[in-house]
Length: 319
Image 1 (cartoon, one colour):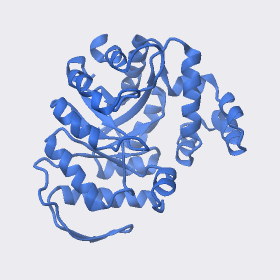
Image 2 (cartoon, helix red, strand yellow):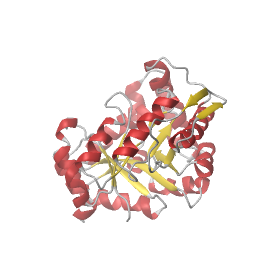
Image 3 (cartoon, rainbow, N blue to C red):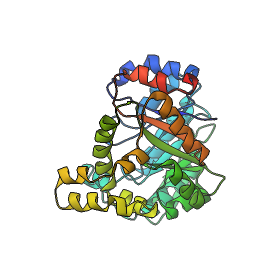
């Protein structure tokens, strides 16, 4: 396997305390560190630190929303990381969600496909050092040029859950990022994306042999994600719509307890990697065997291991 990524920061470990474990990652067999941006740390700061703590790792956010920064500022931040880690930074962008964009940041969540496409096209030119004056469908830029374009423009990958965005990623980006899928679902995503582009997926991993503990955690996470319209549509496309329909109905009716109780064990087991560390590593490899290029582990608290112990136990070098 060529790539094995880890999501940082780890739950339960302050960002300032990550230096030792991040520095150890290359020796453990990890190749990448990836961040996310919701209501915790921003996507770029942990990567800036990791660029100095472990200079061989590839660094990438999955993802930076295209709405919450102006296009020029987004180009500046990407250029900064590309300068800190020449040839080792990849920029992941996507629409995010109405909750993050509109409810939390007071920005209209409009025309997400076009907004992502336009931002991608702008970033391609800006990160190549061009002076950009362009009226895109969703925004206009007049006379922007980076003071110093990166010597190695970073690849750009798109968050993509369904065929339209996957095809955009295949045509104009350097790959696609997905999440919340089972190994068998990778083949469906690959059919829409094609064989060539890199396919990245964040995999939620709960290393505990207590299946009920893992399923209880997984049900909360699944309910939080799968009731969001874009994820609901994603799983309808993947063929999981009927299995998740009772949860969606109960959630829409305001019955959170029932919504959790009607999520089938099989769905949790499909979408959350759990079991012993050995079983978790084997499950991750099933994703790769089905066409995933880059698995990115997101460690879910569970079991009795500390964050550092969990990272070591899940590493490729562990087995």
